[in-house]
Length: 355
Length: 198
Ligand code: HEM
Image (cartoon, rainbow over all chains, first blue to last red; front, side):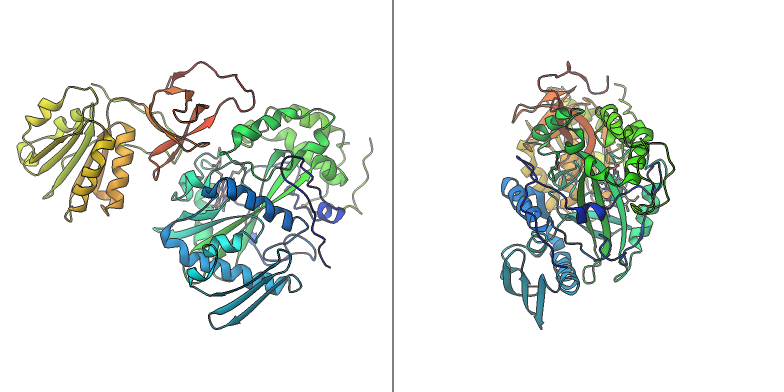
């Protein structure tokens, strides 16, 4: 199917919206009625047709608008994209990975022609048709990482692997859940995760790092993470927190269903061939509570998860103050019936709301 | 003077040790204020004959005592900023096996450690010991400006004027902790500042 790209915004008038298609394929992150941190990683080898897991780099109806938003963020703050000097080769690795994947997975949208090191890249949705010399930085308008991630949804951390650790030495980060690339660049896996509560004590990061260090080329992995965002704001950066933080206080019982969004990150991990680095794309999906409630199973489950989430996690994720109002809203969609296992909405099989 | 015991913290926060004299042909000691006391604690005539001391007194009166140790080289700088070119120059000349000793405030140790790492000194050859003020060097995450010697939480950014709370999240690259707007969700509601460890 050809994707109809939305003309929409993630700021000011917030005209972002999900089609029925986008709601149905939303990566709802809860496979059971409760949530706790875990080393929730699996192979990234496709998924059900039409799902966000199917392609290596999912492209959806928000693509063009997200790229427009990213360009605005970068114009305001170029420090959102940084690469330490030794990371240029990894940038080329990433450019190749994305161009090859997208042109194979979406031949109607992207084309890649390679003649030795003479490459031509056609990006139809963004109207780009560029020729360049592979591995020659002077033939692109930006560094290779910046060039390709200005054309790819999601944030990107490019990690150098050395001393048995991963180092965040490059990244394009404009749709982050409240952390700063400019502050974290150069840190190792344990340092940049330092602010996360409970997970260190559970040994999660030690096990996760071990898994990541062993990821092989051609065998990517993935996991989901989630948080909450008021208004469909992609750029929830600490840099701009003094501007957007106030929006959290604009929730009312009447507007909550439309304004409160579940924010889900599809995180993937790919080994890079020449640099032996690792790339960590963090793809953000937003869905309003009212759209989520169209799936009875998700309504029941989201209520239970938010209700029972440990206080440390609700505080870290920044919605502890709004949790009571969220629960008042969500409880209307929980009739106490059991939910089926797994993340899928099971719309046909689950009973309608009996309330 | 007794040493301050920092409470346990998150993994990005540096931990400091206790200086000990190590064998080696060359020694570089960089200290500010009460850091002088840590140097006085390990100084021996033998060690001092091979030591270059760079000291920034910041109002503490240890200069004469340090000079009296007869170090091979002694430099007193008015501020860290004024001394950093000299520190770089000295590190440039560092021979294999140079031992680096950093002591005093966190801001001094963090910045000097960066210089040493950038000069290629292995981290195993760098020792640190905290002495004196527990003030922090803070980066405002909003305007990126650095405020030195922050003693209270919250504090006002010396560049953009926002009221910031003091996080434990620390960047070695910046040699700074992170400051984040404290009243973003309730403008004007800024709690009275307290000492960082109160
Ligand atoms: C190498 C790839 C990874 C990168 C670059 C990365 C980066 C980050 C960053 C920057 C944060 C925000 C920390 C803050 O508050 O400042 C974070 C949070 C977190 N990360 Fe990772 N991470 C990676 C892999 C993983 C893996 C494999 C796990 C597996 C368990 C994991 C688990 C978490 C958890 C549980 C949080 C807290 C999220 C929340 O509650 O919203 N991360 N990560």
